[in-house]
Image (cartoon, rainbow, N blue to C red; front, side, top):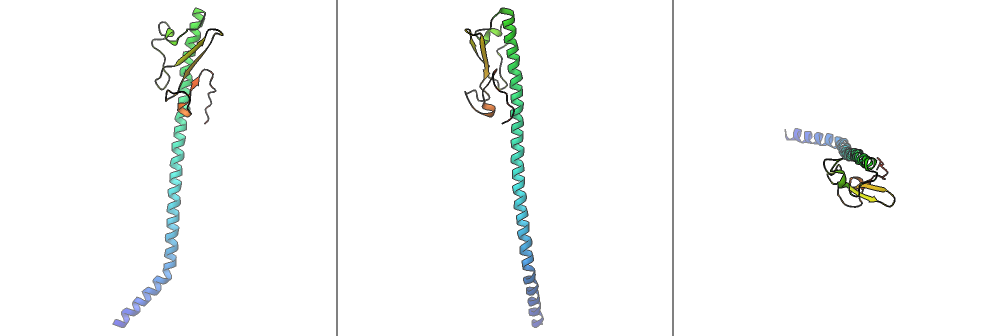
Length: 150
């Protein structure tokens, strides 16, 4: 009986040693596949997030442009009625607008008027309200190249 048990152990050991390289290769392949799948999932998540934020920036540019265009239309109407542009944007609120116009981020539009050459600049400082910046923090005015590609 003792002899049978040791023969069984030898046979099992023999079979396990023959299967061991196959098991090792299979586990390495599984691990490689799992790591590759994880990397692909992370890259996909990054691309989706970037694409979504680019889409939001694109939407904000369009909204900002339309909002600014409505203020420009009011400025032109003011000039058509009175023969000159207002010195300050607040002059539009009494007759032409019910309140001071805000950009899409809730900040007041800024307005510079040059009486010498009868030109104006209406602009927004973007989402951060500070001069300069990029993407949503970018400044926009009535002379901006409204590029939609970053």
